[in-house]
Length: 222
Image 1 (cartoon, rainbow, N blue to C red):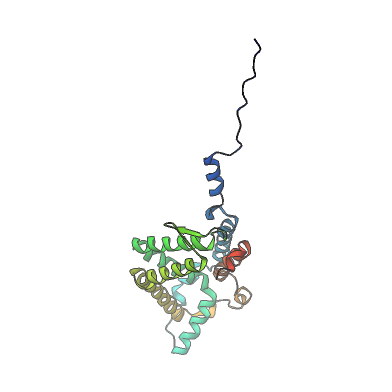
Image 2: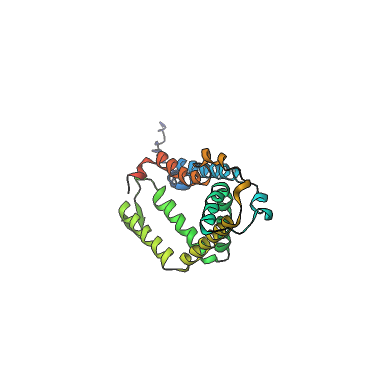
């Protein structure tokens, strides 16, 4: 009796569903090159800005405080002191803002959620992947309009706005009072001229340049 060969079973090369899901999730905004470049640039700019701060002993030198002779003298002092201590002033205002948010957990959580929404739903979302929520697909314009409306609601119609405004007003008041009463004659203001475009100002401008260079499709959305 002749033996027959066993039937050959078809083999599929289709990757498992878990592999497909993992590869699709590998392009998440949090792991994209543009997002990593932005975080690295923010860290570097922050370190460069803090390296330019003046010694805190100069900021708190009580022997250098005196009452201004006139309003114009106070204004001149504020301008000179801000030019010299601007990094220290930014740090103080940031500290006041951070303390205000930490003492108001609702505002901190709300702002964190708002920032995450802008980051992952618009800024670093791939242009070829439309936003889909509750089974509905949103265009880039609709996404931008929704996020803008949400930002206006959070900032102006909740307690978040009052917390931010109060903290900023307190910080500006500190800068003005310190600048008006701090005598700037002992400060070397000439060396400030070549570094006016560095520090925290570059910290604010550089991320936008990196994001636009790394994700050119984002700039065409607006």
